[in-house]
Length: 264
Image (cartoon, rainbow, N blue to C red; front, top):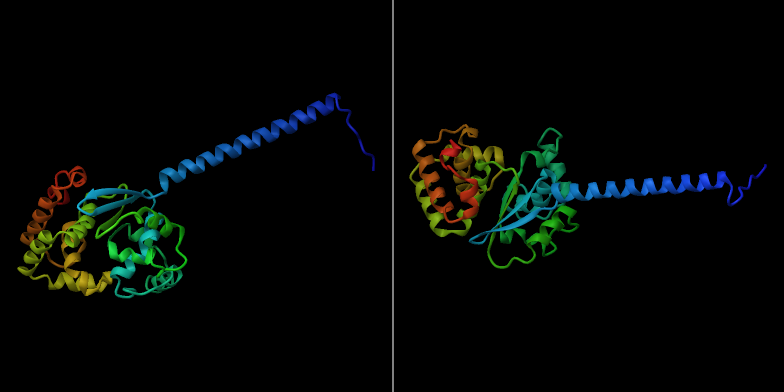
């Protein structure tokens, strides 16, 4: 085999070295640009953000359904699902159960895009009850680790509708504020909500403990989504109670402008 040695200063050697240097420089620039795009994408499409609303309410937002859904899935289901309430389970175990009851599909993050939890329901992220936390769960834990005392967390997509915002914050009001809770329970006790309760139990897998809270929230958010008949008087009374409480929070005043008419 003949070996051709290039003289150091030959035209071919200079051309070869320039070609290699230009190629490597070009590739380096491409890699830097690509990494920059990935970083910008992650900043704007991932990384949940925490905002203090006031009164012990904290809002976590994300632009990404998967990030939000997988961050909250296990703690949310452990808190209110009749199947998983109080249990320790892995994400794979939940997926298996979900697909078995959903014609083989796992579309949880598409179906469920808003979450709400009292502070004690988040303990499994901190006390080791849930082993092998996902990256999404670790991000959620990191955002919440400095919060103390009794508080409430709402998780929303950044482009959440007014209806969804009203639904999730009504849960926070119901848990944190005794005056709000008493007014809602008084209104509910004066109306027949048996059919609504049965419907929510049948297709949303809620436990008895959260039914009053859920009845209120679903009437506020999406009464048209329920097959049960909802009395207009009941709806208006609950809307007015929520509207009066929401006035105390500038964030809600900004996003719920025109409420309750905005929800009709």
